[in-house]
Amino acid sequence: MKIAVASDHAGYHYKEQVKAHLAELGYAVRDFGTHSTESVDYPLFIRPAAEAIAHGECDLGIVFGGSGNGEAIVANKVCGVRCAVVWNEASARYAREHNDANMLSFGERLVTLDMAKRAIETWLEAEFEGGRHARRVDQIAAVEEAWCDQ
Image (cartoon, rainbow, N blue to C red):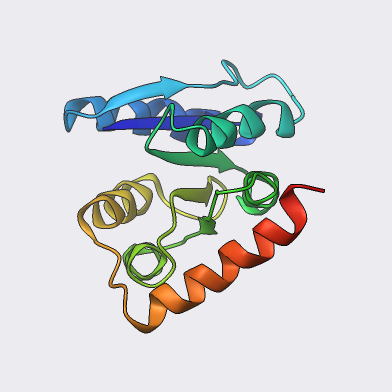
């Protein structure tokens, strides 16, 4: 499984540490940047990571920022991406089980590194439940279909 990672300057430290953690767990990781704590515009890094998921170049993605909100907003503009802002293991598990989230977003200023790692592991181990949740994910896909080809 290949996981895309990306961040802005405010999420750089977590990206680097999570990237190493994922490699230790046996995952292939593709880093879309940024590559320092120098101030950058996050859409320039988050969009290519999200597009890699939408195009099937990566299976899942994890992005980091100060709050994680802007990064999730950018990722969710890419058709086929369902990026959830998460803050603990439960929110990560539900993102997978109920929303079939293929990306996660974290705020380095809001979540401890240890919690982010535990949430990521929980998300990677969880499975989409389907059932009533599949109907809702299908409805999300219908919204995308209506808008993405315009």
